[in-house]
Image 1 (cartoon, rainbow, N blue to C red):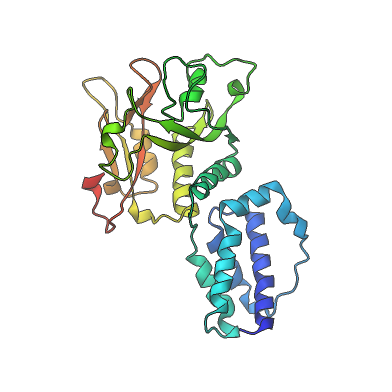
Image 2: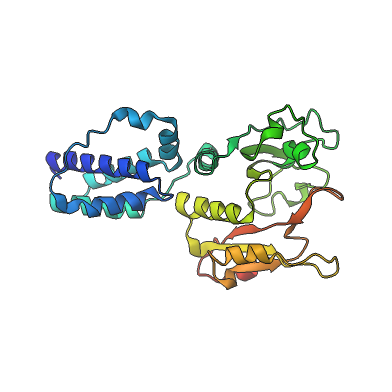
Length: 305
């Protein structure tokens, strides 16, 4: 590629990024690819005149960071520089590369920041920092063992009305947890699989009298498929199938929402042991829904969920 063609590409990419910033699509790379293809026949690009300070706005910076736009564009540009691509094929080649671009998670911080950025920017949640693993004001717990622990005063109607906690409507956090005793004891499971640990972080997005299942499922799906790039055909969903003996009905609402995203054979009912959440023997409880990832592929993993 000639220097002139790379300079032209740089201007075109700047315009494509600015258009993505203006539109805020949940999947910016296919959007930018479509923009490049749409404007490819317009001859050499001209400087857009956009102020470089625009990218310094907090919401813009958060959006670019959430989707790792800078890192992905650098990778795409470096790949075309080292490839044997003619000037006439350059824009098309970059558009093709952008269409297949996905987020890359190299560290725990990448995962944590992507989750928090998604819910604080996309869904306007308040970031709420992790509490210490040893609770200071909850005598019922030796260690914090779930992300909901610090929100118990809200669930139980005991939050100080003058506190920031009582004013929360939406919150996003990542909570440090220890599960080494009590109801949630994972000691017996450590070492038998690849996902049970005694110390871990639990990411959570919380609604306190605000949104419910429809938004929760939609945002979870968008985060996993559009932002993280997880193939849709690898995902399964579970929901509570009801318990006749206890008089608890099936969660048909969650099932109907999931069927907007997945075929019926990948939306599966489970019993009260697997898909019914409760804080304790008494207190808040209700049906829950889970997303499962098929590590094998091929679409035949329903029996493994």
